[in-house]
Image 1: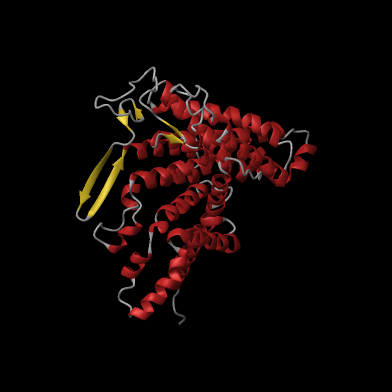
Image 2 (image 1 turned 90 degrees about the vertical axis):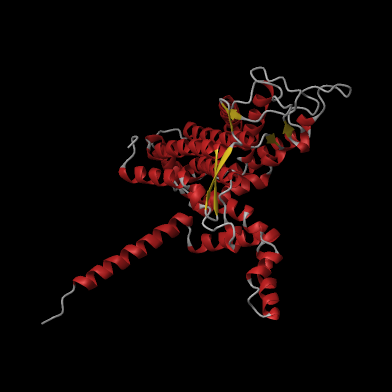
Length: 413
């Protein structure tokens, strides 16, 4: 199917099913239930799942296949966002040209950074990419945010190319050559796909359940599925095999007479283009681009996503991205009042003790919970969540085999 073997085709179909039915799967609890706090089936969060899934898939092509750990991939995420925003401001609100410019711009930027950084390996490569990312952040935050129109003018470049700490935003004065500056009601237009607005959504009420189907989510999901399919083809291609050999033993590869640098640069550029695509989608879903998307913590986040899901696996980065974004948006919203409502059945003194013990791990302390989970995964599941799933599947198969043997065993005469 689509040039994939049976195993990869089944994996692709599984991801397609998860994406299509995500509004149902992520809303398991009715709105009237106290557990509705854990529902994640609203458009903004589902969009984050798939967008950061694209980011992690691209990062895994570099880190998972070559073993080169980049701490500067957020730079390409930010470049993609800024490129998309300038396309919206200058030409029109159609998301396809904006995404195309995001991918191309990030690819060019990745060539420049990769050409320099890949001259070193190991920790030196990681430090170089981190340095480039922080330089990009500084450029976006201050250097390229200077007033280029002059203090007495109110033009496109009043806040420079990046908008500084407030970010690059749409305004009614943007020219938009191929689109309207304002809508019929005088508002700023929103990103759309040939007239279909990304923020448009339809709700389905089934009893106490409310399911939301967002155009922006499904558009982002289709892009993620295409990105996921492309990553499978890269993993299974001869190019992917060369990247694996670089990770396995680059010195031995050099002895064969093959120069690995062009392959590493190609992997770096592809990975950067994935990140730029994710950045462009972020701008398409929420028309804003800020320098915080280039900060080193954003680069560290995609590293955590990939390791948590499973480095070098196909679906692992997507699972890791979903897990971290779920915790960031769901676990972080739980406060002491919600905890007290959950444990109200306990005696007052015991209730206070339980809430006091749990509270540091939720709300603003969700990073502590993430750190513990990450530590446990690294210690007990080096292969990430994918390895955990494989172990569970093996246990189930083993139990079924044992049950079958027990059922077919005949008593001795």
